[in-house]
Image (cartoon, rainbow, N blue to C red):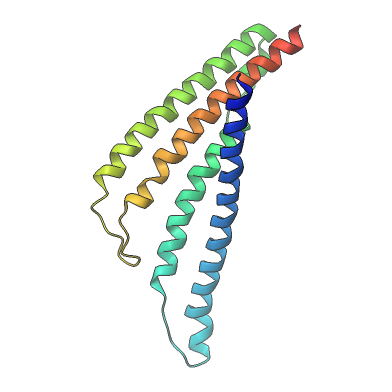
Length: 168
């Protein structure tokens, strides 16, 4: 595979990992704030509520799941049943693995397209607490699935190059 393309994808994944870390940190802060406001402040005689923190944490979790799945796809860490691939001889095993990865990339591409359709469909909805367009929530699916499709194709090509080098 083209070294520049690999470099570009790895850079995108690097920044995606940073976004994942920031997203997880924000979720922890928001949920901790919600717990403090809901349970600690009333004991001090200061009842208060921050309903937007739950919604923001929930929306961040959706983004973290889709982006994290894309990063997992790059490293072959998505859940898989590999008993048949491991039981087969080398050549059929390689072929079956590449076929499975190609099928997975196609599924991610279809999810990207349908996710974009859903994003456009739900763009008029407004979230109750944050009063944001749900476009930003629904956008997590097409973005995450597009990145997962690219990462799966890169993994497929990388595995092919590695196994060809081992065979030589």
